[in-house]
Image 1 (tube, rainbow, N blue to C red):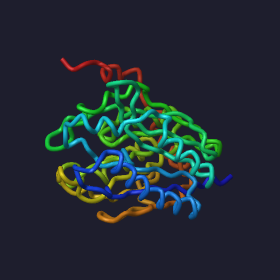
Image 2 (image 1 turned 90 degrees about the horizontal axis):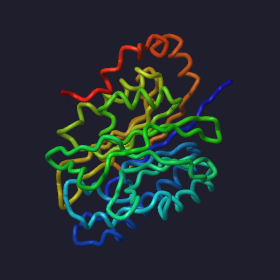
Image 3 (image 1 turned 90 degrees about the vertical axis):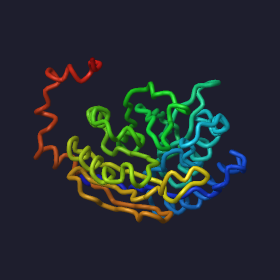
Length: 292
């Protein structure tokens, strides 16, 4: 029985690159821009749509300013509720990454997962939080995720997982998502040229091959003032369990990427490469030990 699903990703540049603008105005402009592309995805029959990391604003982590705490909201909250209505309209499941406020002073980098009818299924909180110079001062804004590696079974029978940006450098969680049953893993990101671009088309395809899963990886585009830490290089893509690119975006344009993913390929690949059968978890205990 064929199990083919149309997967979409959106990459987009920030709208208002003006530090003097209010956080609310910046977010409203970015949401308006995305809504047009989200409706386009629905009209083109996308069945599962992934948005980029903290999609409704700039990547503000090059700064260390408390003003950006104003961008955080409850999950589920206003932005998720807006997306629930769109998901229901198009029968389109969605991965919605936002800045989450759990309580006063407690914030996470989070992605909500919505079912095809708009039902909120749960969330993933970014596990690995970088503090990398220049420009990735995320520990100022986010606590490390505390929800583990959940997967979400959609009403269509497809199981999805989420890894966020810097997480992709850590193979342990990628493998756990697959072991928990994820068939498609979404990796919303915000990353610039000159730092990790050489890894972008290397790591996630490698994860896909190692665990026999599809990966849908999004990255924003453009240069964001006033920080100007470099160019977000886009290149969002969808890759299959053989590491083959099914669809890929450009480096510098707002774009909707769509690919048909034949989930039967997971079974086909895993019957050839028996990585799950040949695992030796009895010998992996050192992976969970702290370094001396």
